[in-house]
Image 1 (tube, rainbow, N blue to C red):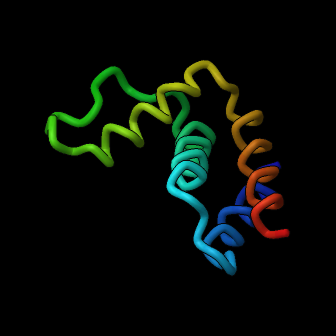
Image 2 (cartoon, helix red, strand yellow):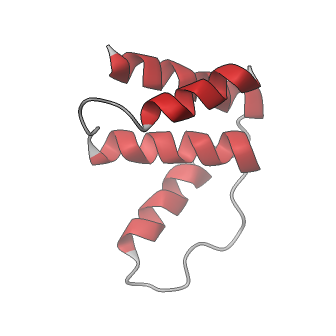
Length: 83
């Protein structure tokens, strides 16, 4: 699973088209959940860091998702984007 995940991460950087912002957030949050687990309690401290807040919120939404499940969802999403 780890090897497939690493291949998907590499592949995500070579997609022919840039994914939508929503899809990029999904990729980011799944990656963070797969590599670091649940998000910490504190989000970005700057109230004007809208991108950081969106990333944090997307990651927090995956709280409790198992590492392997996040990896599989990431792999599936990259494979869908590649086609």
